[in-house]
Length: 483
Ligand code: ADP
Ligand code: ZN
Ligand code: MG
Image 1 (tube, helix red, strand yellow):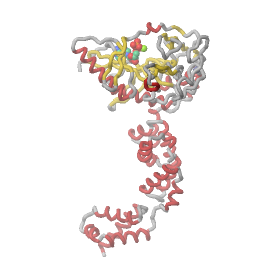
Image 2 (cartoon, helix red, strand yellow):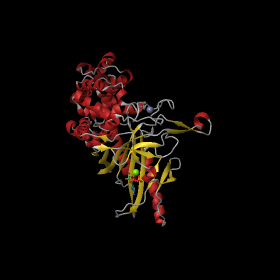
Image 3 (cartoon, helix red, strand yellow):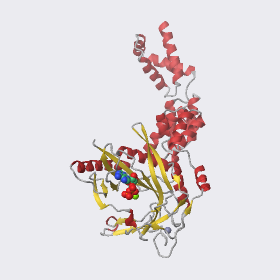
Image 4 (tube, protein in one colour):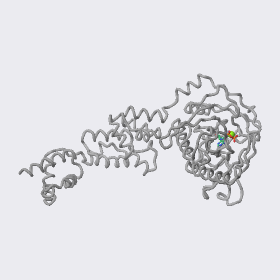
């Protein structure tokens, strides 16, 4: 390709604070329209904003997790624009002095590691929501819900370091994993708690100057960001190759048509008449405060992945899957430590546990099979009291009832049969009932052994200890051949 794509992302995350950024209204999602508003967030004259301390702490957490510099002094600014969902006529944001600057997020695409630089992280308030009334009251009107006004956001601006839609996707995945680990945002793009505007331009491959970019809005999943960028790159390429010029503009992704469409010509920062917010004093962010937040930083995905590899001797692949989200990682770690069998814990969590979470569309925190249950189950297996097949049946019953594996095994009489006499009886019965297969075995068809083995397991309703059966059956067949 004679042209190289250049991409920079602007991501907004909605912070998981209880209350809004400048008032004590609730941020709870899904409440009736306009029930979570007060004079401050609805933009009444004469009121004063009070900054939510948690917002600053969350900004610092994210800044530290993405290796940013934390500015010792941050200033809120008014961004003036006029839109029905913005009752004040301005948004309180940050401009010249944001909380954090100059960080990085690491990504990996096709085994290739790369750091994407972060330009800045600033805090701001969200606007309300326009709702097209047709769906609600059947009238051709627009209604305004101000519940979202004043909900805290962090805007995270990347440098134009991404070179393909795939890298953009990987960046979003890494970024979301970090904010979820930090517990500062649920990262749900479909519900709008994570939003992304994608900036893209082309330049002749091998050159350094940036080309004219367009900005794409309105994507509500990572897959759509990737698709929209792919479409937009092809569109720009077409314009350039036919001798045209790219117009700097904002475009909307149309997911039904799979295209981007012009929305408005680009606005520049001078259009917003930014000035320092006179109702809020500049924030002094002390070193002590930064250090305190740093001490609260949880272990991050990359650190956890490496530790799992070392401590539990896991492969890179397994460690990656098990550290994908913090809850699963914690669950796995409890089972691995509690049972002393990290390998078994990994197999169970990536196998049966993952499958049941998927089937039940349930988070691991509410799964009835807790880490304690799984520890018991692994111990029962290790002690030879149940075999793997039975263990899976027990797990199913734990999932349904939340009862202890030990209890279930006792009640069902599922303890494994290792008793030699009982097993020998079952073996004799199987040999008697399958003379043709026994003969085939002696004539050299080794495969028949598996069949006979299966028959013994059936005779015992799957409760036989497979190792014991293998040993006894081999012995019995060898004796038969001699006799
Ligand atoms: P604007 O003034 O249009 O807001 P910024 O410099 O603030 O532009 O950058 C906004 C986002 O666009 C950033 O993520 C940045 O990396 C990205 N960006 C800037 N210039 C380009 C370009 N020429 N091509 C692609 N992305 C760009
Ligand atoms: Zn309020
Ligand atoms: Mg900008």
